[in-house]
Amino acid sequence: MENLCKNYVIAIDGEAGTGKSTLAKSIAKKYKIVYMDTGAMYRCVTLEMLNNDISMDDVEKIEKMLDDIKIEIRNDDDEDKFFLNGKDVTKKIREQKVNDNVSQVSHIPIVRERMVELQRKLANGKKIVMEGRDIGTNVFPNAQVKIYLTASAHVKAKRRYEQNKEKGINIPFEEIYNNVVFRDNNDKNSNVAPLKKAADAFELDTTNYTLDEVENIVVNKIKEKVALND
Image (cartoon, rainbow, N blue to C red; front, top):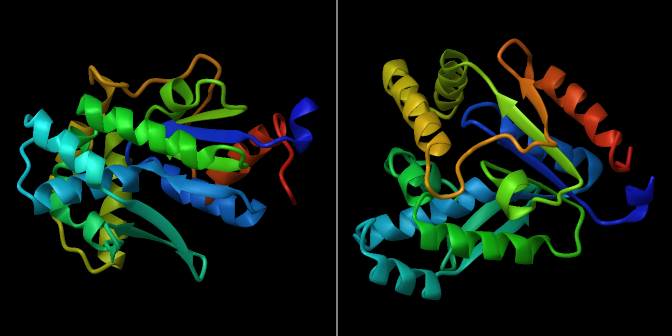
């Protein structure tokens, strides 16, 4: 296969709560591929807007903020940490106020445009696995591997609820479920890079699979396209 010795992009798209981040991180760690958490990048922008009370319709202030913002991803003891203008915001970008606003922020055209530019720049010349909602359709339409994950809203909310409990975050299941449904509708009906399956993507409904089962299925599909370092 031509791609065996070349740099490549593995694009994992799908709905929130389908396990995209967990899957991408695991593949990156096992096969020594660069992992890029695009969702965290949008969360950094969201946090900066909240910190500065910038309205989502104030294009002028948003553009100025994007001109000045500095987002860094540093790996510390096999853990990716996110720095916003020099400050570690790894935990802050997962707080509820960011959760409640990140979907809307990611639909702002100028934000999407700037983040896509940054993602392409960071991925240049690397073997990389990247997850998001439009990686295979917009950011890297020529990605060598495209995966699209789905799951039922109830299962996605349950997964998020369990993850929050493990982290000591107490958010009612109903609130999480409503947020999942909102995110899905918002992402799929967006006028800016909507969530949709690329024509050449492999689609997997993860509702009835464990994370390990999903990973095994996806890794086998990836190996059909590119060489992974076993």
